[in-house]
Length: 395
Image (cartoon, rainbow, N blue to C red):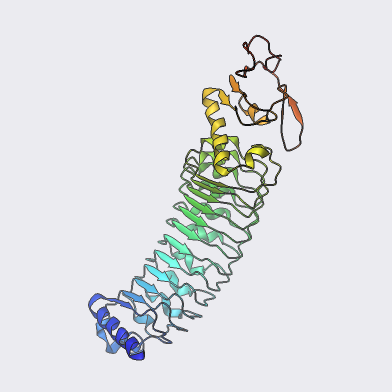
């Protein structure tokens, strides 16, 4: 077994002499090999090393050799036992990729501020107790992953990350976001699940390029109306929060395909969501006392809820609404949202009262006013000749 591991090690070393890429993953190493460590100067064959993978070993530190890795552009130290990085770690000024996941790091060295060419940084599953100070200077970052640490706040200096496209901060202890998050103007993906956020800054709505957003498992009790600028949004996860209403502005996200809302005390969805024609997945639990859509609709499968919303959206254009054959026992107040309605088909239902609508949140009835035609095919030969003030034909 040992001989096989040794042969694989020698093969990897020889391969790196030709390619400049050295993969020493899964070797149970407890220290950096002397050829690329403390005896680096004696092995010029590794001086052109540009990629170094030391994943899944038992390294406690990488002090030896780091100061020589000036040409390295990609370094992978995932799944080791590293508790700290050397102070001179920042000498790798050409580094563009750095993977430090699943170690025991509590902080990143300040010298990393010199890694201005760093594009991708991943420090998931460590013990970072604060937002790394060096990030303010790493303005070339496009991907930043800091999931599952102990970070409590995001400082205003985060606004310097103007070209950042992907930010993951799930599984921390973040309780507030600064208004300066609008500096993340290139962001397309934002994941902040399982934090302690009670609310979100309005400036979050200014991130107009966002496509994938997740705030699942926080304490958010309201969603900012400024999200109306998220016109490219494809997936939004707000599950496990305390949100009772969604702002109507969410309907501007007409590219949205997945909207996850389960675990919120929802009582209302905007009827205008029917314009979101790309929506294929909708999840919710609600408080069981819906204002709109009505309870009997919200108790059905999500695709029927989407169909209901789309039907109301169609009616805004056609001024016609078909509610036939749906076993309605009363007319719901949602119809009042259609002020220009000229045709309403209620045939083959269980209606007993057509002079009022009911809103289910308080159970109160509202008398209908105006002069609208109600079409009830099959019940009368002349549905227009005798009408109540609400427009329903008299018997």
